[in-house]
Image 1 (cartoon, rainbow, N blue to C red):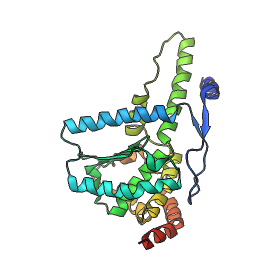
Image 2 (cartoon, protein in one colour; image 1 turned 180 degrees about the horizontal axis):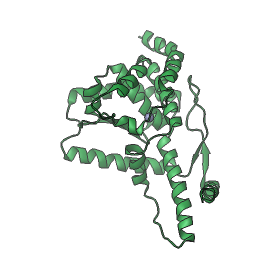
Image 3 (cartoon, helix red, strand yellow; image 1 turned 30 degrees about the vertical axis):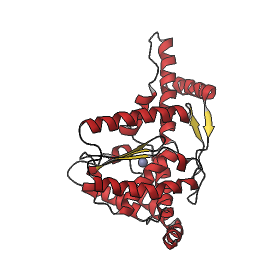
Image 4 (spheres, helix red, strand yellow; image 1 turned 45 degrees about the vertical axis):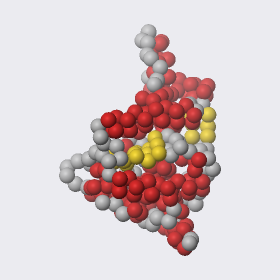
Amino acid sequence: MRRILVTIAALVALAGCQTVQTTQPGAVGVERQQSMLVSSAEVNASASKAYQQITAEAAKKGQLNTDAAQLARIRGVSQRLIPQTAAFRADAPGWQWEVNLIDAKDVNAWVMPGGKIAFYTGLLEKLKPSDDEIAAVMGHEIAHALREHGRERASQAMAQGIALSILGAVAGVSRGGMDLTQAVLNVTLNLPNSREHETEADRIGVELAARAGNDPRAAIVVWEKMSKLGGGKSPEILSTHPAPTTRIVDLQVYAARVLPLYEQAKARP
Ligand SMILES: [Zn+2]
């Protein structure tokens, strides 16, 4: 059964699949070809819709951007990071980036394809991050968007869905098509990133932070703080951003590698 699924998925992939390299390797050297079944334009349009839904819902509940000082703080960090995305892809600084603050207890932050970012007040209240630590979390989220991990995950979900629907058709069961907006919501809010995606986002994230003049070593502190948060409940962000067991060691290596970029950025007038 599994073999049939894999074979069908492979056939589907061959039919509609595109292999892309979404980013330049940067100083951290992230290089991996990605298979996409759906275009950036389609995914980004769906992400905009999904993001609109979430921010509108938060606004209706009086939970959108209620803390002007904290909002200014996270947007300030984003404004220093976003121009640095040019090191990985030329088009990214021109994206329609959005950064909003949702008033909720969750220790969470996420990004949707195309640069739609959300931070939760719970993360700021419980982590008490420095600006460098905010840049570490945001750099990580921005990296997911640059690598189009959401598009890649939606593509994987689609391949599985198509394979299942083909099998379903064979078995006489009908299945509906996949709703891309729903898929974007699901991969952003519910499903864990792969360890591979997390490692890529960690490495690109520290480089973005360093280039923006934020100490890249703050990423080590922030993920350590995250994993030590008590209260019996693991931070929400760790359910969608599972820690590779080697995360801290890997961050130490890559933060050290991009330290000269941080020194250069700090020396700029
Ligand atoms: Zn992540």
